[in-house]
Image (cartoon, each protein chain N blue to C red):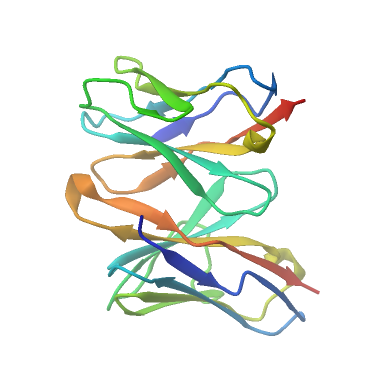
Length: 117
Length: 113
């Protein structure tokens, strides 16, 4: 299957700093990528849909100025958590869509565990 | 609104026995797909099996199979001959015509030796 690489897998940062998470589709082009947030023992919560060459579409309640998404190429989307606070500590995971229409499938990155201290 | 329901927050199963995890997709779409993923403690999402609404037969993939009931829009995951390594969180995901991907609440499965 297709491979999506997410980096870093784990990051600890100080409160007030910004953290960038990268999501790369290694062997396919992805016009659409998704960013999810997951708290322990809970489901994945969709944060935003990232479309190559255009602005991301954020889900209700997600601060777009707080979670900056850039999808500058067909193989890379980045999520930047700006001015991080301890409550931003979570597991962030991306997925990239491959294919079209009924044959579309989503492939997930390995996830990033963010800890803000 | 579309919704995926997994009614079992946690399940236990004895090693080597079979277990069924529930998933129902509340959607008005006639064409849809239901996916199952396994998420071990490492966090990665591992694709297990897929069922399309127009598939004639229940999907099977090794020890994984789906009990697909089209009228109920449910695709329950059956894991046969459970292994200790099957202990993980399992998510059902729905995909409808809108393209949006919706996850269920998840089921934590623990396999007892």
